[in-house]
Every structure is written in C-alpha cells, then in structure tokens.
Length: 180
Image 1 (cartoon, one colour):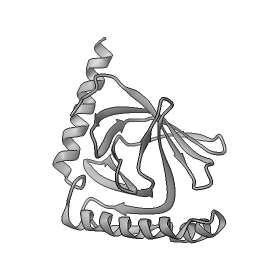
Image 2 (image 1 turned 180 degrees about the vertical axis):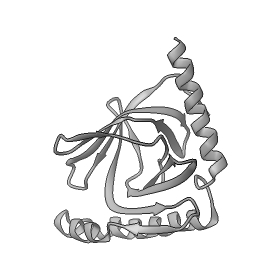
Image 3 (image 1 turned 90 degrees about the vertical axis):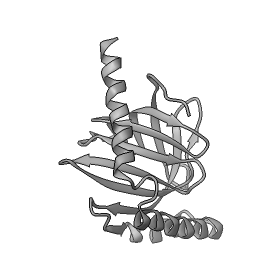
C-alpha cells in the first residue's frame, strides 16, 4: 500500500459513446492498490460536458474500483456520511487522468444505509440510444446486485470508521501541504 504525499489528479467521466460527461479538476490520491484507488476532495471544481461548472459543497472520499463496475463516493454532510454510488466501468489511470464510463444507474445511500436506485429512465434511454451491448447490461445488473449486497452487509467501503480514517488522512495531507 502506497500513500502519496501530494498527488493531485483530475477525474474524467465519459458516456458509453465516448463523449466526455464530467471532469473533477482536483482529486488527491490517498491510496492505490490492486483493487481500488481512493481519492478525496473538498470544494473541487466540476466541469459538465456543456462547459458549465460548479464546486462540490461537501468534502468526500471516493472509492474507485479497478475490478468492479461501480464507484462509491462517501459524502460528509452535517456530521454524517451519505454515499452516492455510480454504476460505471472499472477505473482506468493514464498520464492524463483517472477515467471511467458512467452507465447512468446510481444508488443513493443515506446515513442509516437506506438506499434508493436512481436514474432508471436515463439508463433505459441511453442503453437504446448508445446501443449498450448485452454483455455490458448483464455485467451492470450483476454488479448492481454486488453493490447492494455490500451496502446491506456494510462491507467495504460502507464502513463509517474506514471512511473517517481516509478522510482524516486527507485532512492531514492537506495540512502538511499548506505548511510547505
């Protein structure tokens, strides 16, 4: 396990048709291993495909999986942790950015681990418009079930103490970097 002192990267989200969907301008890599890249941000600039931009309101720690078709964002708000999960291709890393394909379906998880599946209509529409292959649709359904199982059984990364530990590492890194 390698902890980076100061490693800022951008995060690119694409759609299945290879169009750029969204860019997070500054993510701090906290950990990278064979299974996951863990990044964190606070008030980072997000640029939409149409050029509009906004800044994240709450700090977050994201778990970008290399072998699973989803990513998980732990969001800190009002002394609680909520999660937002994207069904997506596994994360890729190149010289430009961290990258994944967004497959529309999302799961919102509240502080009590109640969850809601979002954007089913967007998924139905895009799978037709962008002609998602049957193999990808099957993978996404299986991975959604795996993700739901993780949520229900509080498996990594749905463990608040683990998320807090990574967030504290992020805060410590930011504090060290400001002193330099």
